[in-house]
Length: 119
Image (spheres, rainbow, N blue to C red):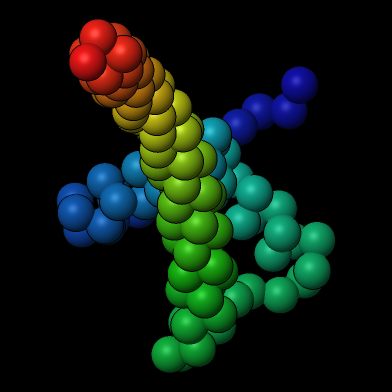
C-alpha cells in the first residue's frame, strides 16, 4: 500500500457542514467525495472551472431535485395508502349505517302492513 498524506484546506464551517450532509445524503462521506473529485480531475486531466462557471452547482441542483422528487413520490404513496385505508373504513361505516337504516325501514314497513291487515 502506497503512503498517503493528510491534506488540509480552509473552508467556512457552514459550507463544510452542508457538504458533509450532502455527502451523507448520498450514502458517502465528505472524504470519499473529495477523493473522487481528485480522481476525476486526474482521470480527465482537467480541473473544474472556478471562474463563475457553476457546473458543479448544476450537478448539486440536479441531485437536490432528484431527492425532492423521490421524497415527494414517497409522500404520495403514503397519502394514497392513507386515503385508501380511510376510504375503506368510511365506506364500511356507511354500509353498516345503511344496513341499519334499511333494517329499521323494513321493520316499520312490516309493522304498517300488519296494522293495515288488522283493519
